[in-house]
Length: 193
View 1 (cartoon, rainbow, N blue to C red):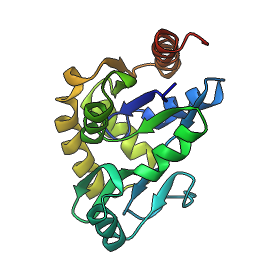
View 2 (view 1 turned 90 degrees about the vertical axis):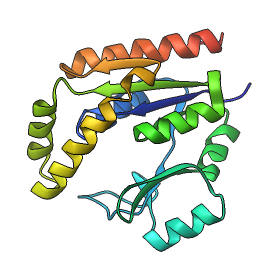
View 3 (view 1 turned 135 degrees about the vertical axis):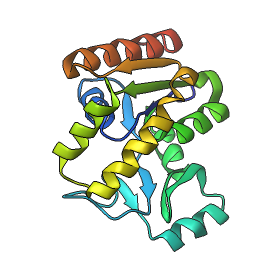
View 4 (view 1 turned 90 degrees about the horizontal axis):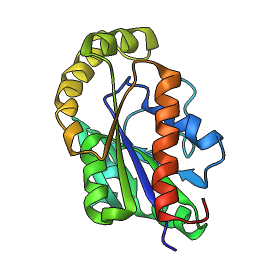
């Protein structure tokens, strides 16, 4: 049976990565698709663990070679994308694939895989709460935070195009809702669960 794809998208700082990491730890037959990016690593991030870190030139070379199933230049010379090789690697193991991608990337994956894919949007309770989270995270300059806030307002307009929207106003509640969503999707498509 072909792998199912569970695609999580959200504005930066919405808690998406925390929720995805929670789901990866609790026993679902899923594996994380590591995205590629041309941005530098943050904090303790490692190549091949959180992301495949590529230079902007290498990223563009791989785009030209059709090595991505989706990609986007999110900011000037800052690309994010999903390598075809990553989807193939996980699919060969017989596991379902979890994506943590931006909204445009998520919609592009859904277009390619249709009903095999579930689009889940993680929304912040408000733009102001999102601003506070980004400030408290302490990983971005004030200029980058303002860019992320502007992008978040744009990304929130895509939520109606997703299969499910989870508002992360309470992390434990959002985790439980994500668990139930994933369980329902995998059970409906895979009688083993």
